[in-house]
Length: 405
Image (tube, rainbow, N blue to C red; front, side, top):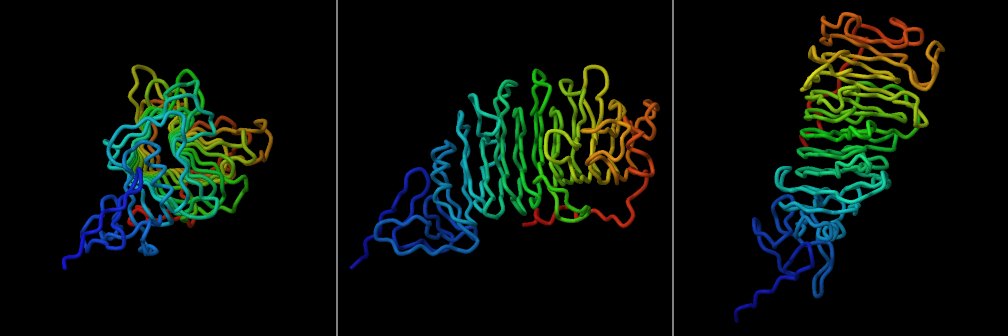
């Protein structure tokens, strides 16, 4: 007698599975395949199904569409190690936020064809997509285009990596028109990972003249020992930035590495530093450390000059091998923040900064070595900053090893 073929069991918005019989290698159980290409069970149980067996590397759960209800349903069925795939489409999530637990990964069909938009008024504490790593874990995010309101009255955020995400990877995506920040990493002293191969476009409002961050890194309010040249930082490498106010900014005990990026300044934000590290200002602590090297800074302006390529207001680090074109007035700008210029030492001020081998514009010779030190009475050459390589310093491996994974 010929056995009857079982009908698939379908769960709204996300996946269809065969009951207790799974296809062989290379087959596809409509919406669910493992990362190895084998079909496997999903985590939600269905009538008359045996307990699911899950490959330790996780499965791929295909959302039915890019609409937020479809994606949220898929995320709700995922377990640690699983990937939620968002198909091609352009979807408006209005005022809603997608919340994703750590260790569940999001992947779109590509930044050109999977687009998620924000419209409507939201608080500046809201994100389009937020990962919660408070219980530990990592994040992988790729192949998506996120688009904000582009309205200076609405300080919206794109992607949030929150509460200590470790070994995260954000790649091959596009972030456009967010007013507060395109990608926010915070607020922990243990966060680390890599952001690479992305585009950050026009995340700034000239009407607001504030915020406008491509990537913003907030630490946990502590002041850790310097660990330059190690994995203990947020790495931002091989990205394309254009039209943002501060393409990267930092605060509150943050540690970051900004390297091998292309950074383009446009007319609306030409009065600001293209790369930034806050001193003691709006947070409990200022920026702890930064490593800024091998970046290319250029502008596309109708007239005048971009103010600054790299602006540092506190903390310690290294700045080297950056190329800064002649239409940027200051290659590097040093300033005091959170204390009166002339006092020493100011809390969280520059105390150990090494600068070497950056291009600077001879046409702007009123700045020595391309550096504008706005407070030499507090930030002193050969005491607080030095024009030579940092003794013993070696950059962390490039490309970042997480990219290979």
